[in-house]
Image 1: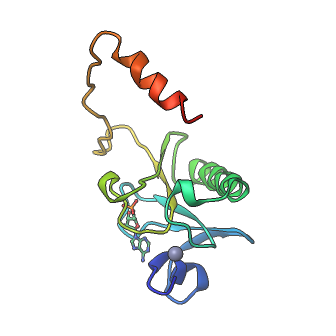
Image 2: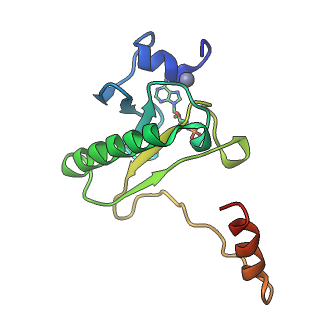
Length: 136
Ligand code: AMP
Ligand code: ZN
C-alpha cells in the first residue's frame, strides 16, 4: 500500500522508534502516546482490520504483542497495561493498517477508557446472543 504510513515504517522509508521486529511483525512507539511507552504492533503485510488478517498471521501478531508487553512491563511500565485495537473509522481507526495498541498504565494517569454502561430490555440479551450465534 503506497500511501500507508505504517507500510512506510515497516519498510524503513520513514523513521520510527522501533522496539521489535521479526519476519512477520514490527513494533514501534506511538508518536502521540496515551502514556509514554505506548507501542503499536503491526503485521509487515498490509491488512486493514482484524477480520482481514489471516488467522496464522494474527497469532504471530499476538505473540509479538505479548513479547513487547512483557518488555514494556519490565522497563517503563509496572505490570498494568491496556491492549486496544480500533477497527473501522467509527471505532476510531485512523491508520488503515491493522495495529494493536499496547498502553502502559500508571496509578493516577489521566487516561480514561471507561464506557457508560447501557441496559438490555428484558430478554434482549438473549436475542443479541442468538443473532450473533447464527454466524458462528
Ligand atoms: P488508530 O486511531 O487506532 O488508527 O491509531 C493510530 C495511531 O498511530 C495513533 O495513536 C497515532 O498517534 C499513531 N501514529 C500515526 N502516525 C505515526 C507515526 N508516524 N509513528 C508512530 N505512530 C504514529
Ligand atoms: Zn499498510
